[in-house]
Amino acid sequence: MELSDIQRKKIAVIGGGLVGSLNACFLAKRNFQVDVYEAREDLRVAKFARGRSINLALSYRGRQALHAIGLEDQIVAQGIPMRARMIHSLSGKKSAVPYGTKSQYILSISRENLNKELLTAVEKYPNAKVHFGHRLLKCNPEEGRITVLGSDKVPKDATYDLIVGCDGAYSTVRTHLMKKPRFDYSQQYIPHGYMELTIPPKNGDYAMEPNYLHIWPRNTFMMIALPNMNKSFTCTLFMPFEEFEKLLSSSDVLNFFQKYFPDSIPLIGEQALVQDFFLLPAQPMISVKCSSFHIKSHCVLMGDAAHAIVPFFGQGMNAGFEDCLVFDELMDKFNNDLSVCLPEYSRLRIPDDHAISDLSMYNYIEMRAHVNSRWFIFQKTMERFLHAIMPSTFIPLYTMVAFSRIRYHEAVLRWHWQKKVINKGLFFFGTLIAIGSTYLLMCSMSLRPLHYVRRPWDWLTYFQKTTCFPANSMESLKEIPSVISR
Ligand SMILES: Cc1cc2nc3c(=O)[nH]c(=O)nc-3n(C[C@H](O)[C@H](O)[C@H](O)COP(=O)(O)OP(=O)(O)OC[C@H]3O[C@@H](n4cnc5c(N)ncnc54)[C@H](O)[C@@H]3O)c2cc1C
Image 1 (spheres, rainbow, N blue to C red):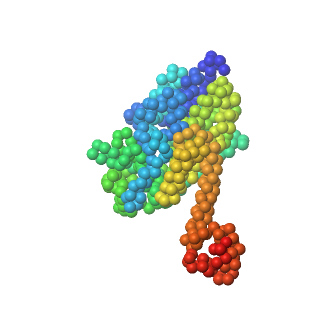
Image 2: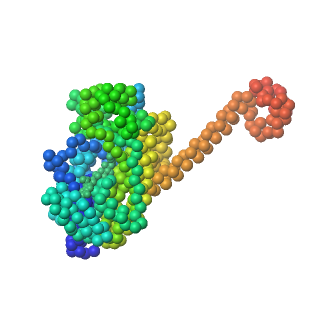
Image 3: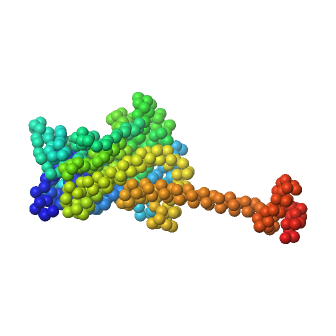
């Protein structure tokens, strides 16, 4: 496509959240005319800033997307590396389980700061405009028509060559695609909700080791804590709603924390804990899958609008950022031809986004229950050992997901294959050990044990006569002269 044709094309990005603002940068960089419609006011303006902001784990895929628009270094500089999980047991004992090799880490990033940086980056493009306080009311995805409501409360219509739905888990764009034939959709609320608490700095420094993702796994529920640049930690308590509902008074909360997270009370502070606990109700978590991600060459979904996932692999934003990167790579490959890029994007991303959705559900159990067990720590050590000796053959699942761009669905297939190989290997070594132990046992009973192996019929004869094994090697050898003599 000629540059002048690109410059004439108008694209509406619905949602100026993390994925929408990143995607607007990618599209503006390609010289399209980009309008971003964001329902909320500009969060860079102090009076609109949201209260407490959660932090997110940024990993390799997200970094690669930021790298492609030239923002990686700037964002990484505002993040705190987390090299390992720090498991807090009930007794207060802490143990670190590394995420990968010494050079591999994920970054704790403030969601709000990241969004602000991305919005500022969009606005640097003269061909891009962010319309804050503009909510999409409806759209016709096949014809590229949208109706938005701004602060004047008068609905306005506009037509675009492409509508990009980045309006999050409860996407309005997606609801319009759902009315189209052969559009598959499913959603699931998990029984757990989440609530955020804060561990403030202690004497001007971090109250716990900063370069870790702290986890308090308690089987049916768990708490995690990620470090912030201001030396505090944001804790997130994940727990079934029915458990949240049992904690009605300050003493209920304190007794609960005393029972399950005793080491966290002095860190959070009793008063702050109770205050924060009742500040906001626990928030729900939804998992959404749909297919396809596009319709004709006029509408496409990205980020949570296409695939809201539970947050237990820390990949929701990373996967959304990778959506933008993959789309950008396809635009390069197919010379900005939307009629080819959109179907190709759906074909590539649906299996991958569905795979990371399933993996996140799996990690929902691994994080709160399995990380407690010695078997988990043994497995992780074994995985690191195998990866160290066969780096390209054996890659731990976490490494594939968080530190590579191996396609998510391929990572799952490879993980299953590796698990099969490890289980077979363990069975083989187990069998070898069993044979070896039997041999040693026989050695302790006989001077020349291989005689028994070589001449099993002598054993049989002996066994028939005595109906038992020789108890002591020397005595038994005397009793079987035929064996010794041969
Ligand atoms: C507790 C928790 C922890 C998480 N931790 C991680 C993590 O560690 N790592 C990670 O990668 N991901 C994490 N995630 C997931 C991550 O937050 C999301 O995947 C990410 O925010 C998705 O970005 P998005 O832009 O697609 O959607 P959103 O961030 O939801 O943004 C959507 C935007 O669209 C706007 N909008 C909505 N409707 C309209 C409309 N009709 N018109 C105009 N604008 C509209 C909204 O105002 C919003 O700004 C976590 C999620 C949760 C809940």
